[in-house]
Length: 277
Image 1 (tube, rainbow, N blue to C red):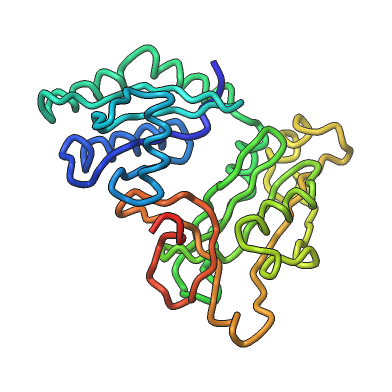
Image 2: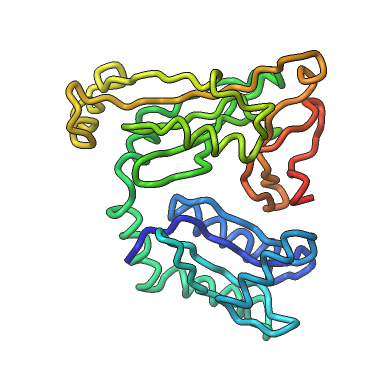
């Protein structure tokens, strides 16, 4: 069984089968699998189109389809529908969730995630994620969140509760700077992202903790074994840009957001990119 990359729930805020019931169970599932949760609200422009395509291609589709519906996205691009709410009652839908989370199918998923995950991703989370504070926006803690994960690399951001991104970090044994530049500039634009602002640091296992050196040696044949981090921080080039910042498209309270990076005024309370508003 392949590794799950993301859980998606298709819902509507007015539906009692969806919010809070299925929104919370979907988040529980994502947390246990260690992957992001994508919430698609059928009443939000942009999200509705994505939800319709997803349900039509992989789920239980009719013009007025039943919600919620839950999908798993696996390595390699495979998408699998695993749950649809019951129209009989909210209690029946909850019973379905409970059965799903107790099922052998789900337990096998958890076991695969535990034993079949990317070793590099696991190493980063255990040894290279730190407690930091937000910069240029507030003094709240900035938590790490992975926004891209593959076998050979991890990209994550440190963002505060307001969604402001202090820094973006790319972890890899052999980082591809051209790829990272394209990844960032594709979301933020070439005027915001400059190649000269990509800064590389080499991390040796011995500077992290007593176990990191031996674990890192298992990931690479390079000697001494090293992990490389590539940092990117938004550096405003003029007075107009000083009032703006990089934000992560995510509204945890409403359970929506595409997880992409976007630019807006530092003082804005908005949590969503233009496409997800």
